Image 1 (cartoon, rainbow, N blue to C red):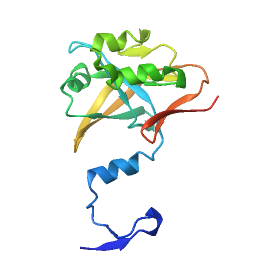
Image 2 (tube, rainbow, N blue to C red):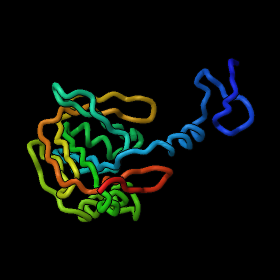
Image 3 (cartoon, rainbow, N blue to C red):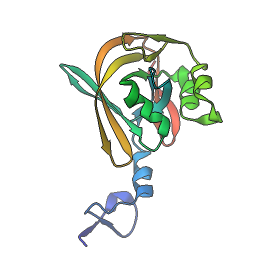
Image 4 (tube, rainbow, N blue to C red):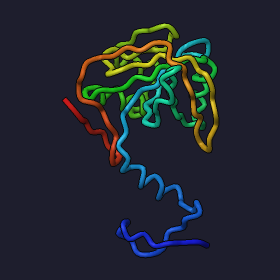
Length: 180
């Protein structure tokens, strides 16, 4: 096996360079990756659904496309595909309780999660969080399954921006704020 030492890790021993990283070590390293906290929502014939997500990014601005990664093991997450629409809501620091609810803390039902905040709708009908720093209303353009996750590509059909409040981040397995 092709290996090399990693003096920056502060650990003795060798690390594989051929993709042999175990899941626990990968998750430990990813915990050092600061990420914006978002709530991804959908509604339509399959019913409402919302989850807290940090694996999101822009793909293109012409046409405007974003991507969201959602756990494929959650059966209710199929609603995003079945409804063919979703919204990405970027959270401010004061919305941490909403992020926690949509992350599954308290084991709230879908209805109880949505009751933790106020919502509106834009063109797609997906729930838009009132007071979000930004919200992107999307039509599902493509879904690709990669390992344990579905990667959803959404064409942005509407945008709403909020204030310049502090952003809610997730780093080191805890919520933090940045800015104002």
